[in-house]
Length: 92
Image (cartoon, rainbow, N blue to C red):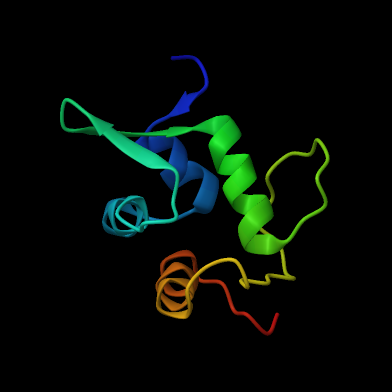
């Protein structure tokens, strides 16, 4: 379980609060799962999700929340929710 991130890890990573983290975890495309009522995110799957969401090149990198988001792989209604949760602006 060393590659699993917790709610606390996600809050720190994305600089968001509990409510927004839980809302993010409930999104169909977000790589989260519940085990005994606790949410987890596999770190490798999160990197893949970030690549998909941001259309980043397939290479090793550290996750950074920066400008330049493209969301073509995510349904439009979910894109809006993700942008709102994380404070991302598609036009940045």
